Image (cartoon, rainbow, N blue to C red; front, side, top):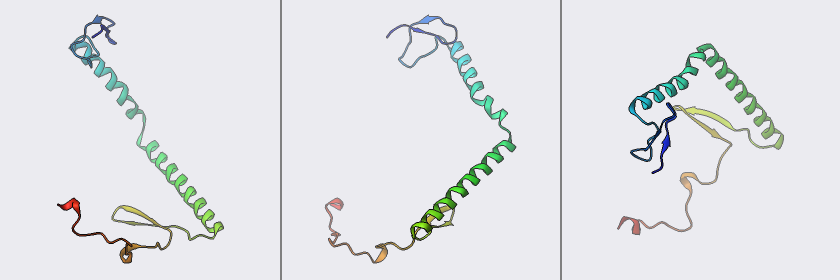
Amino acid sequence: MREKICPECGAAFMPRNGSQVCCSDKCKAARKKRRDDDRYRFRDQTSEIAFREERRAKARRRAAFFAARDAAFERAGLPIPKIEERGGVRIESRGTCVGGAAFRPTVPISPKSYYYR
């Protein structure tokens, strides 16, 4: 392995393994604290009011998108997609499809498949 430079104190050191970044446990703890402080600093600046306003803006953009999409489907003469929510899952349908429970494949699938042997 090659000699590395510690990002905290700037000392040159020989790493004990390939993933070692800092020269000592003291530098490692200081680096972790600094990185955590940088990461969580932005959570304090974002208030709940700004978060709610951002969600409202996102909902407005989504509503505008779906309105434009429905208008495009109507101009093209296609059925407008219906969106319903079942058990927390959004389901979008554009009409009926060929197939389903009455679908019969042209090649029958054998119950004695090699997969189950």
